[in-house]
Image 1 (cartoon, helix red, strand yellow):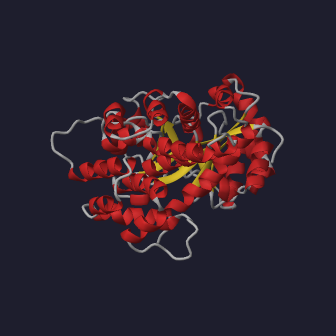
Image 2 (spheres, helix red, strand yellow):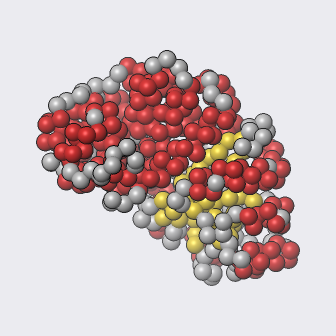
Image 3 (cartoon, helix red, strand yellow):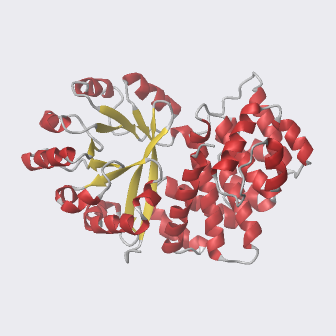
Length: 411
C-alpha cells in the first residue's frame, strides 16, 4: 500500500451499442483537493498512481475494461509511463500539453511500443495535425464546446481516422445529438438519468418485474415467486447467469430456476433477482451499464458496512446492498422513486436512505454517489460522516471491482 492517501474514481465510457468500453481512472490525493492545484497534484502524484496500480494489480483496478489515464507533459516524458500495460490502457494527453516537436516524437515512440493515445478535452487546432496522425481517440467536451460549433469541429477531425468520444454527456438528448454527429464513444451518466415518460401503454415486462420485486421484498412463498418467473423467460435466464457468475460456495452450477430458488435462500435470492431486473431491461443483458452501476453501489455499500464491524453488521450489510441496487430503480422503471418505494415492502432505514438520503444507509449511499461523480472535494467530509478511513474505502472499492467484474462471466 502506498503511504500517500488518495481517492480512486472511475467514470464509465460507453460505445454506440451502450456497452461499457472502459473507464476513465482518476486518482486524487486526499490531502490536496483544491481544484486550482489539480494539475500540480497530478504531476506530483504520478509515482503514487503507478505505485498504487502496482500494489493492487492492474487487473484489480481496471477490471475487464480498458482504463483511460490522464497524463501531464512531465508524466508523458517519463519512462515510468511505459510500466502501464499497453494493451489495457489509453493514455490521455491533457489539454495543457502543447503539440511541439518533443511531444510529437514522444507520441511516435509510445505508439511504436503499442500504446493507445488520446487527446483529452480537445479543441481542434491546425497545430495538432501531426498529433492527429498518432492518436486513436479524441475527446470533445460537449459542455465546453458550443452546440452550434460542434458539427464543424467534428467535420474537420474527420480528415483523420480518429475515434471521437463525447465527454460529459449527461442526458439522453445530448447522447442522441452526438450520436447523430458520428461520435462513437460517450462518457457520462446519461444512461443513469430517470426518463419519467409516464407511458400510457402498459409495459407487460416491467409490470412482471415490479410484481416480482414486490414479492421478494414481502418474503413471498417460493412457489409464488417461481410462478412469476415463468411469465418472463428472459428474466429467468439472466438470473441463472448472474447466480452462476459469482462464487456462492456451491460445488455444482445451478442449472434450473427451481434449483436456484431452493438452494440460494431468500436473502441471496433478493439480491440476484434485483440484479437480474437490471439485466433484463437491456439488450446487453448482464453487460448493461446500469446493472454494473447498481451492482457496484450495492456491493461497495455492503463491504463498507462490514468494514465498520458494528453490532448487527450482517443484517445491516444486507440492507446496505439492497439500498445500493434499489437506488436506481427509478431509472429502470422510468418512474419516480417515491411511487416505487411506496409499492415495495421496505424497512424504514432503506426507505429513508432511498427517499431522503437519511440515516447510516443514506450517508453511505451519498458517499458512493460522490465517488461516481468523482466529487473528490466532498469525500473527506463524507468519510467523516460515515466514520470510515481512506484505506477502508479504497480496499472496499478494489474488492467491489473484482466482484462486479465476475457478474459478466458466461455460464
